[in-house]
Image 1 (cartoon, rainbow, N blue to C red):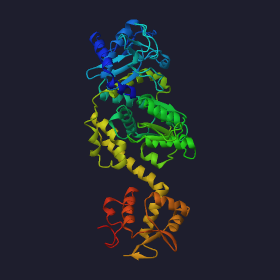
Image 2 (image 1 turned 180 degrees about the horizontal axis):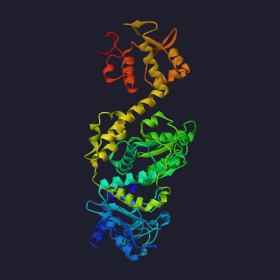
Image 3 (image 1 turned 135 degrees about the vertical axis):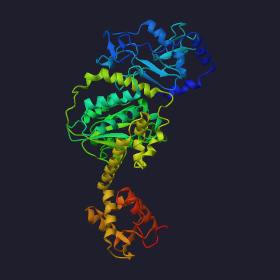
Image 4 (image 1 turned 60 degrees about the vertical axis):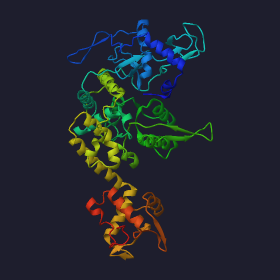
Length: 529
């Protein structure tokens, strides 16, 4: 993932360019060094571990990796990974392994170099330094070091192996499904497919303008936290949080582009608390590319701080607690089950083998999905927000040449489920009450036998709500209110209200397309025709 300093490499001075060109003439870049502890069987693609000895970064390895640094200037994207020369299949805690390399792709091949590499602008020596204020080890002069690879950092996600592709993309997709089937219980097979497509799409989120969320909903002890945990292992830079402050959540998404997997979401996003409102705002801003989370600067009263929080996200909760969040999510209603794998740590080697290939998918310069982004338009039921949610998944399915019929069927069911959620909201109940009152064809003042005005008091009595709250929701629904002696009413003869009600009746699933034209037929009066 390119960061700000990497963009600056394309604006380096002529002196530094000359040093880089000289360095390139005297070095021979090499592909990844390969694992010294692991063989890959050419026939089966399976990893065969030879030993588990700890490997350190030798001077010879360091020299070979530094040879690649001149090619790094051509890289369009990169990732900090485990070195290709260690055994990442061991299920030990790889967070504690002391070395990382920078994996990147040029137009031709994958390479790796080292983090914290600096060039001495005085003598051209290339080496690793903690910071640019140190003296050059070659000429002993200070003040001339220039950083050319990013600083190493402790990843909040499980460390990635150096990227390598062993299997076909279809096989990789099936391996994701296999892991999901053995670690999570779903009562419908299609859910494994949807989950796997989402995971694979998370590695190409740079190709999309919207990022669908996953929402696991279930009572306590029904597998939702396990689903979130597996997602955090397999999705791009997935990190699971039981609780997190808004500042930390914003910083980790903006700085590291993590895929946050937040548990106990109904508490972490509780809008009755300040922290909950902030976390909720971050989630809402992160759905669409180009929408930034903006806050006033605490250091400068005239300045604002804008953070890029776009990206795939997942959460788990005991209930569907917010309509707006649900409309941006693919919801999995979990049920208690007994998955085959009890301890996820037991399959870390298997997941690492899969993750290194997914990272390869992420680092491809030419998007493999570019010719498949329009496949969503073949799904007639996916319109509006549904189209935005499922475009990444349909693009991956089309790229893999999967049978999309079961996926389309799932989308159609999800559409009905989302309509039901909307109907159960207070806004939905208001729209239903208005439609019901109109259908009853009663009340004062009619045109062609239809009611002209509907009072807010009548709506409130029908659904058992306070009139003032109904008034606020009427504003949300973008309906015009009129003051009368009997109180505030909705004037159905108003052309704006007619058009808006047509839209609302359709949105909330109260009319079909064929019914839409006649829903507000006032005998040809005021209907815009």
